[in-house]
Amino acid sequence: MNPRMLRRFIILMVALTVGMFLFWDLLKSYVTQPAGDFDTKMGDQRLTEGNLEEALEHFNLALDESPDHRGALMGRALVFIQQDDHDSAIAELDYLIDYLHENLEDDDGTGRGVLASAYANRGIANDRAGLYDKALEDYIASLNVDQETVEGPGVIHKILYGSEDVSTVRDRARYIYEQLQLPEDQRLMRVPELDEKQRMYKP
Image (cartoon, rainbow, N blue to C red):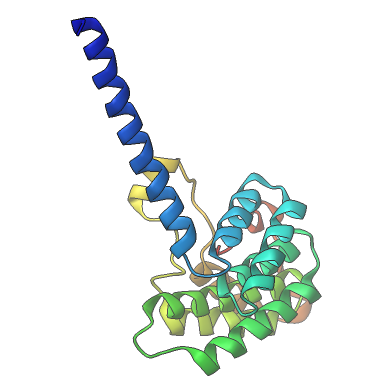
């Protein structure tokens, strides 16, 4: 056999083998992942891109597959917050928080993080709706459930993504508490340039 043809044949076989392994790995991860996970991930990507309508469509598809998918419920709430539909966001997070309280296992660290994030996000929705007492309660609940989850981005995240300083749950809770101690006519509850730095917690 011609050595050049043999070499091409070997290269082709190696490429096909690698391609088949990659295809099989992708297929396996798609087939074996829990119901609703694929559309939740797609929704999260659309949310990151700012495409709220498509994000909501994916989260709805995930909930069709898995009606209590906690990532999809959280994702829908975040879409509603960004659309300034605070009532819908609060209702979605009320449901998620109640569901987690009823179903969370003691050893489910990820679930505890989701619960802390749900309280933090409901705090943001209440905050933006002007319900500051409720927002403060939610921020405190979030910190009590899992303060590590709702701290600001760490040093590595800032190095990788260039994140600027953000307003954390603790920062906002402290600020609201201090303002609520003042007479009502002296309170400054909204500071737009600071409020824009407030971080929401993704699914």
